[in-house]
Image (spheres, helix red, strand yellow):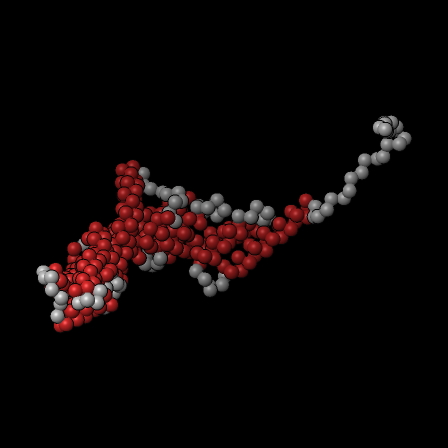
Length: 314
C-alpha cells in the first residue's frame, strides 16, 4: 500500500546545511601552486649561476619556470631581467668576440629572447639578427659544399630552431636576404637527405662485402650507383668484380665436371665421380653456391644423382 507524505510545514523544515568540502580549499590550492612555481624558479635561478651545464640550457630552465602563471610579479620580473642580462652577454660574444661559437646556441638564444616570457627589446634583436642571418647563410653554403652529413645535420638543427620572428633590412636588400634564406634552407634539407642516402649506400657496400650471398652485394652496388658518385664506387666495384669472378670460376669448374654426365651415357670413372663430388662439396660448404647460383648448384646435384644411378648405387 502506497504511503503519501504530507509536505513539510515551516516549523518542520530543516535549515539548509551542506557537508564540509573534502580536500584543500581554492585558496589553499592557489597558495600551493604559487609556492611550487616560486620554488621551481628559485632552483632555476640558483642553477643559472653555476656553470656546470651550458648557459643556454640553464637559461632554458629559467624560461620554463617563467611559464608558470602563479609566479608573483616581482619574482617574474627579477628573473626576466637576469635572463636579459645573460642573453645580452651571450649575443655580444656571438657578434663581437667569437664567430666560431656554436651557431645552435645562437639560434636557441634568439628563440628564448623572442619568447613572450622573456621578450627582449626588438630594436636590439634586429641588430643581433643581422649577424645571425649572415652567419647562418654562410654555414648553409659551406655544409652543402662539404657534403658532410654531420655538418648538414648541424645546420639543419639550427634552421629548426630559427622559427622565431625574423628581422630583415628594408627594401630590396631585405627581400634578397629572405629569398636566399628560403632557397638555401630548402637546399640544406635536400642535401642532407641526398648525402645521408649516399653515406648509407657506402656503408652497406662495406658491410655486404663480408656477408654470404653475392646477390645482396650486387643489390647494394645498384643502390650505390643510384646515390653515389662514380669515384665513390671504384674500390667497391673491384671487390664485387673479384667476387663475381671467383663465383664464375666455381661454376665453370662444376660445369666441366658434369660434362661427363651430360655428354655421355656411360658411368663416370672413379676419378671423374670424386672430382665432381669434391667440387660440389667445396662449392656448397665454402663457396656458398646454393645461395649465389642455385641453378648451377642444382644442376651439379642432379648430375651427382645420375652418376650414382649409372654406377648402380642410386
